[in-house]
Image: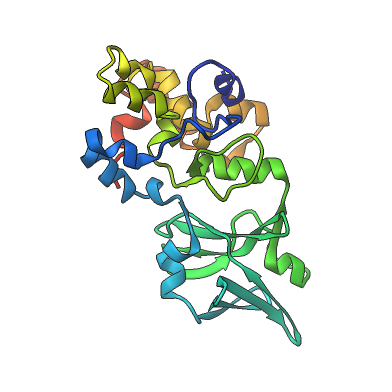
Length: 277
């Protein structure tokens, strides 16, 4: 099944957008029974997939830094209202607030600004491999104006998908101010209110009131991760080809010779512990 077909099924699947966040309780509610897992997951790259600007080490450590991308000059600033960046060329410049930081910076970090309800992905990103700021992947190689040097305007459906893969408690409508930043417990296990209440009350069968991806057979397990990391079926439907698919590890695994041999041990979590850095 495609990811869209998966999330239409009963139960939980990553990127499913519910009507309300009322059943999300936050990782603090999981910690009394799963303290070590919650702590290690919080420190992982996935746990820091979405950061408020004040929690972004990259922003704090580079405040005041200037750099150039294309022919535009940028400067990171911390204003009384929060973190922002200024971009200019010649006598023309504009300052934009940074609303969210996507990624922890070990691989990359891109910035979102919300201008009266319009979301813009910054034209520049931080890249951990080179420890520099450069053009954001998949943006035009040359900004053509101050507007495009600020970044790329995202349609509502796309920005909601961004948050759905980088946060928990993202709803089908409404804003993003109260999402749970990062891929925390409920981003993969689903809303935990019923499970937590049942376990506190020692209700028999309470373990079954939360999604446990460990129970999935191998195709579903890889597709579970592929909801954000792109599955084989999703690639076929999008008609993606060539080198761009190197960014889709779930697809690459399901398209490999090893996968075709049917070994049940070959899944994403066969090598990657999602709770560890």
